Length: 217
Ligand SMILES: [Zn+2]
View (cartoon, rainbow, N blue to C red):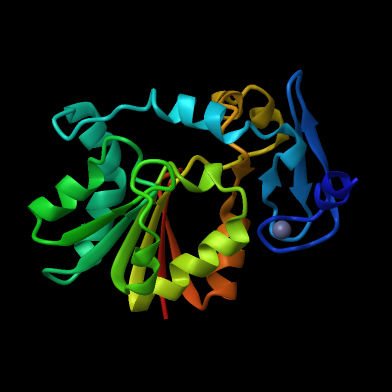
């Protein structure tokens, strides 16, 4: 019953007017009328063992040139905006951190955090000039709480760089490969990030279809 009730509350903005956006053979997807987040209700989430089994397949290596090019869509605009020798956090780095290598090659120092592979909660008592979350925010169980934590550890004028694929419209959503990954439970669009920017007093910029930079004011 609790799940049924919570299922209709937006996990990002708390809005209670979420309605069915789409349903496929495995899951339902609700859409918030306020921040426009599309999300999968908890009833359909994988348990953490099954979730980790999928993440274990995401083995990336710093020597993988293709993966570096993929990440450069975030690191290029971010690096242009950072002063030298900044302190950063690679949030949700996964089993094979690569982003941190790219940024450390440019003189920055990067801590790693991942709830499955680098679970060091003491990092949340530090403060950072920048935080990166690449292919992470679509996995969040509680995006409201996570964004709150990230903005708490981000210094004033710091940068939060996000990479996630964004919802275009209902028609495109139905044939979207992104929703086939059962660990993907939150799907954002520009309005969702504009909501985040307003709530946490940040300025948002978009780069291409899947890179978002939030500059804490
Ligand atoms: Zn919402």
